[in-house]
Length: 273
Ligand code: AMP
Image (tube, rainbow, N blue to C red; front, side, top):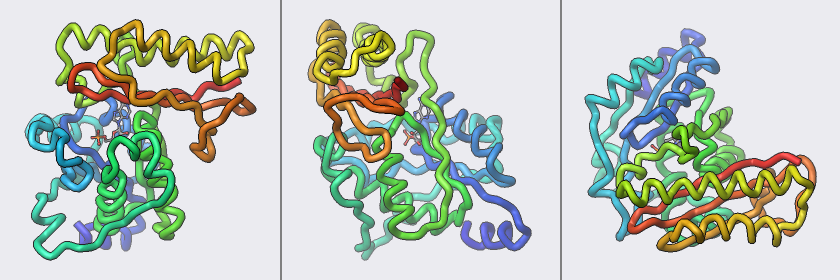
C-alpha cells in the first residue's frame, strides 16, 4: 500500500482515505462518495481494530462480511480496498501507541477508557500507510472527529479532514453496524435518541437558551423510551468540545449515548441558533 501510494503521489494524484471497520452501510458509502469529490483516488480501509475495543466489548461478535463490503465499497466509488490483518497491523513486539490527552477521557472516553488510544493509533498507522491528502470521517462519531483532528494537528500529519453528515433511517435512527444487535422492540425504542435531539432543536428554535431546560427535555424523551441506561447527554461547544451552560452563536453540539439491553448507541446533532 505504501509503494502504491508513493507511485500515485509521484503521478500527482490526490488520495483520500475512508477508514472503516466494515459491515458497510449507507453511512459508510456516503463517506466514500464524499471522498470521491475531494480526491482522484479513494482508498477505503476495512479493519476491525482490536486495540479500540475494551476487554468486555463486542470485538468477537462484531459483524464481518468482506465479500458484501467489497461489492458495496466498489459500487460507491472505491479505487483501492485496503484490508490488513490484525497480525499485519500489530505484529509480535508491537509497543507504540498514539494517545491524545484530556478530550479522550470524557464522554465516550470515560466509559471506554482505552478506546481512543486504539483509534488514534490505528488512524496514525493508516495515515502513514495510505499517505492520504484527505481523511474522511463521519459526524456520527463526533468525539472521534475532534480527537483525530487534535492528533492530526499536534503530530503534523498534513492530512486534511473532511467530515460527512450522519446518514439516518427514515425514523431518524442513525445507521450503525451495532443497530443489528437490537431486538425489534429495542429498535423501536431507540428512535428516542433522534427524537430527543429534535426535541432540543425545537426548544432552541423557540428561543430557549438555558442548557438546564434543554437537558430536561432531552432526558425526559430518552427516559420515556425505557433505556437500560443513559450514559450521557452532553451540551458542548462545537469548537472546543467542552461542556457549556448556555448557548451562544453559532450554536450547540448535543451528544448522547444510550443503552438498550446490551447495545450501546450514540448520536449527536449540531443545533444552530
Ligand atoms: P465504523 O466502521 O463504525 O468505525 O465507521 C467508519 C466511519 O463511518 C466513521 O468515520 C464513522 O463516523 C462513519 N459512520 C458510521 N456511521 C455513520 C452514519 N450513520 N453516517 C455517516 N457516517 C457514519
